[in-house]
Image (cartoon, rainbow, N blue to C red; front, side, top):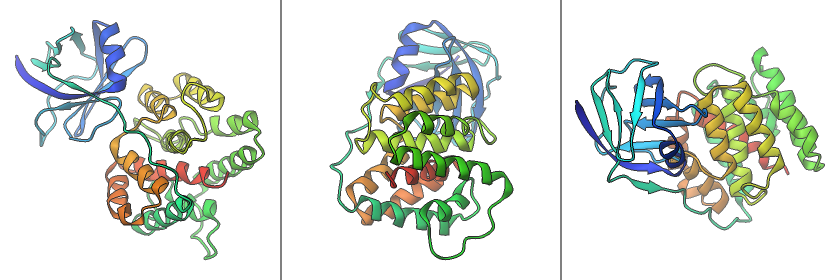
Length: 290
């Protein structure tokens, strides 16, 4: 049995690890291994050093993924996670718990900083994920490129949701935003990533309190019913102001109005999934108008 030490455990990993004695491998990528628990909670054994609420960070970085079978059973104790079929064991005994830091005080320049980052993201990858929505959502004066047909419905729903939020019509906003759940491909579809960005920014900008946001509760509940377990867990964490540290860096730079931090924030967004960081940016933009 090959043993690996876990250096850090995200705050959302502790409850499922304590509650269950078994999970199964839901997915295996070049970035890590996804474990699915009976209550649809997800934990991510990450080969990368990025902290996050769902992440278990291995003590060493691995250049290639470990060989596991999707569907195999993981055996769990207080001290370790073992995959007997694959001959792997992950030691939890020395893992420290990671919690997202509190957000910075809200700067009067935060909307300006958000627009600057949105422009930089659009220039860097104008066709990535839902990035083509940015000019339409931001109302930039220059004519945007023709919008792909598959993005017309997401744009209409985001614009309608924004109007509803401006009018404090939460129920109407939820109806529009629920239509984005599960839209797109992959383990975390673009629609889910967009909603994660919106909920994360909403919480960390102080527009809603964790555990007391009816809109977030409705979206998270719908996500557990309609989309991947991974997306649902990410949305639940975002509603509590918790996310991968690359998204938190972007949020922090925006809310603090610190344009000097935007190059690092942009690099983090571009590095986060194939388009997940950029799709999350689209959701953050929606918040800037109410």
